Each structure stands twice: as C-alpha cells, then as structure tokens.
Image (cartoon, rainbow, N blue to C red):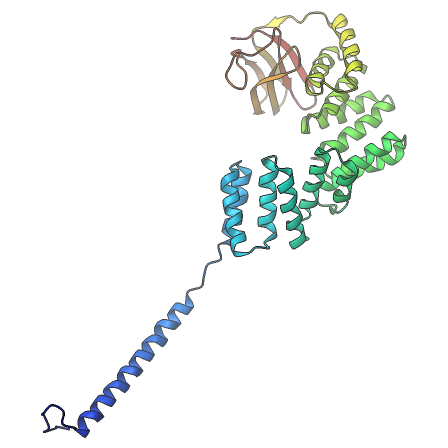
Length: 350
C-alpha cells in the first residue's frame, strides 16, 4: 500500500504493518537458519581421545620413553580420573623409574577402579619381593587368576617354601602349576632342583638350561653349573660357575661354587686361545654369541638371532658394551644354542 505521508514524525498505519511483517519474516528466517546449522553441528560427534592416548601411552612405555608415556596417561586422567588402564600405565612408568612407592599407589588405584586389571596385583607382589617381604608378596600373587602370568610367581614361591621344609612332593605340585606359564623361569628351576636331588642330572640339566635361558637368575646359573659339573661337562661347568659368582658375590653358596671351580681348574687346565669364535650348526636355530672375562662378567654380545645351518666364525674387537677397552686378562667366547653351550678362549682384536 502506497503511503502519502512522507513527513518526518507523521504516523502511517500502512508503514507500521510493513515493518511488522518484515520483522516477522526476518525472525522466521533467522530461526530456520539457526535450526538448520544447529542440526548440522549436532551431527558432528565429539571424538573420544582416551583410546588413542592409552594406545600411545603404552606404546611409549614399551619403547622406554617414560616421560612421553606419563604425559599420555595423565591426559587420559584429566578427562577420566578413575580410568584404570591409565592408572596402571602410570604405575608401570614409576616402576620403571625405580619409584616403588608411587608405583604402588597408582597400581592400587588401578585395580581398585577396575578389578579386571589383575596384573596390578602381580606388579605389587613383585615390589614386595624386591623389598624382601615374600609373605606380603604372596598375598597379592594369590589374587592373580590362572591366566595371569603372575600366577606362576605365586606357585614358584610356594614351591620354594615347601622345599625349605622338606615337602618335595608338595613342592613338585606347585612347580608344575608354575609351568602352566612356561615362559616363566621359576617352574623350570624348581623341576630342575627336584631332578637334581634325585640324581637325575640329565633331566635336571634340561630344566636348569631352560630356566637360565629365560632369565639368568643366579640360582638358575648355579643349578646349571652343578648339573654340568655332575655330568662331567667340565668346560661348561667352569664357565657357569664363573657367571654365577659374578652375579651373586654375596651368596652363601659361593664357597661351594669356589670349591667346585678349583677342582675344575685342575681337571680342565688352560684353554687354548682362538683368534675367533668358531662353531658349526647342523640345523637352523636361534643362537646367542657373547664374550665374558675370567671373572664371568658379561662384556659384549657379538650376535643374537636366527642362523641357518653351516660353519661360522665371529671376531671380537676387544671392546665392551660401552665401546671402551674390555677389562680382564682372559676372555671367553660363549655360543649358546638352547640345548648346549660352546665355550672358547679368544684373543681380542680379531
């Protein structure tokens, strides 16, 4: 409608109607646009970063990047303060740093918030083993279900306790339960000890060798040396007694090891030195070649891995792990083949 009232301040009914209509149309359009864009925004889901941060955290932990791993786990906890896996990760970070107190606190929180994380019980048990409190450690190992690797720790320590009181048949039951996790060395050591006590030295040697290959604990090295000594495998026994004494200088069994070693030196005599470590494989297998000195100290690894059958020679430059000149007067090249060990005296710099 055309309005003739052009003067400023003069009221025009038709103009007011047009203004109201324009305002209504603007409001409707604005509302529709808001509705449309609001719906589109609602379709965009917020991405949960927790799985990604947990994956990265444990990846960094496994790689030994402890600071980076801690950052990822703490990012998770900033959003989810009771996330059990993040608390577990922090516990393992502090365990790797040697901070047992803080590690235990985080591990307890982890399993408290998520009881399915039974590995935390096992890790706490290991902390108490390191503290020398075996009784307290067993309380935590007992909480581990059979599928948890720490279940083997429980039965290994129970087996050791039965051995101490002479209940060998009960000890055997415990060591067999430990062997349900064959990747754990303790069950193999226990069965080797029992076979050795029965003078079954070949079977004892098999178990001790397996235990020492999984984890060269001093008692596994001593058991291996004793079995080799009993079987008259003097060169190998000589070497493993040396390794045992290097690993356990304060052990009460050291005196007996020294006595056996003195006998071996008389029987074996001097080793003839070779320029290189030499060995022959009749079949493909995993091999480890390392150098030790006359005191049994591990100086350097020359090779670890899979080799095809054939003849091999490996030289040594006389350097240790850090690249410095190796300490010692006599050096031995050791070839570990899983079911046997080759020992040769070698000259450095070849």
